[in-house]
Image (cartoon, rainbow, N blue to C red; front, side, top):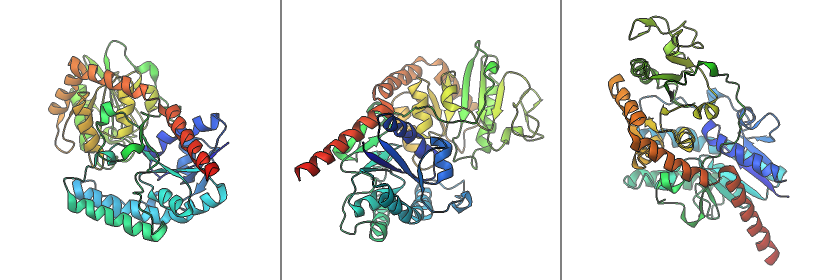
Length: 417
C-alpha cells in the first residue's frame, strides 16, 4: 500500500484534525509517518506514532513569546516573522531527511508548516495541503494589499532557501488537493484554493486525553455552558475568564458552567464572585465553588464533553468551533487574534452564534450573549443546520478517500508516462 507523510507544526489545533485521518489511512492498510515535534505528535496521535523529528530539537522555550495585547496586522507580522518562517527554516532539514528515509508517495503539509510543501516540491514528491482553518481560503489580506505583498515576499524568500527556486505553487495551497476541515455552509465561498479544495468537515476521531471529568457533577435540570480559550491563549485570558465566571454565576438558577482554566486564574486566593463565595483553594485544579454552579478545571476531555453542553463560549478557534457545531451547539465567540476574527465572522454569518469583544466585554455583555444563544431559537437552529452539513462532509474517512484518489491519479500518471 501507499506511504503518507504528515508534516505538522508544533500546534495542537493543527495536529488534531490529522490524527483521525492518519488512523483511517492505517486502518485501510497504508503506512503513515509524521514530521514534527515527537513529544507533541505522540501525545496526540498515540505513543506508537512514527515521527521523524522536525525540527531536530525543540523546546517550548524555543517558541517566541507573543505579547498578549498585539492584534491585527502586527499579530500577523509576529506570527510569520517570528514563528512560522523561522519554524519552516528549522524544519526543512528534518522534513528532507524524513522524505528520503520514509519515501512517501504523498506528503500532506499543514498550511502553517510550509517546509513540508516546499521540500516535497523540491524533491519531486506529490503533496497535498491540510487546511485546518478556513482563514487562508477567505483571502483575508485582500483589503490590505501591502500586508499581502509583504507576506508573499516572505514566502518567496523562504522558497529560495528551502524549496525549488523555479517552483510557482503557493505552499499554502496544493494545486492537486487542499483538505479543508470545514464546510461551505460555515466557511462560505472560498476566495483562494482553486479547484483543489475538498470540504471534509471536522475530523473527530478518538484522541488520547489525560483529563478526567466528574460526569456526576452535571445537572440534567439546568443548561450547561462550556467556556474555553483553547491551548494557545492562556496568556491572554485572565480578565475574560473572570468576567465569564461572574456572568454565569449570576445565572446559576438556570445554568451551570464548566470553565477551562489551565493557569488557575479563577482559583487564586482572594478572588470572590457575586454572592460572596470564595473562588477556590488557590491550587487551580478544583472547582471554583464547592457547589454545583461553576466548575473550573485545568483541562477537559473536550470532544466527550461537547455532547453534554448547551452552549460554548470560546475564542473562535476553528477546531473548537467546528466541534461544537458538529454537535449542534451554538456559540458565543470572542476572537483574540490570527484567524479567529475570520472564524468568528463565519459563525455569525451562519447565524450560529453571537460575537463579543474579547478585550472589552464585561459580565453583562457576556451574559446577554449567552442568554441569546441559549434561548433564542434562531441560533440553535442555525447551529444544528451547520452541524448537519459538517457531519455530511465525511470527516476523516472523506479526507482519506481524497488522498487515495490523489495517489491513484499519481500512479496512473506514472504508468502512462
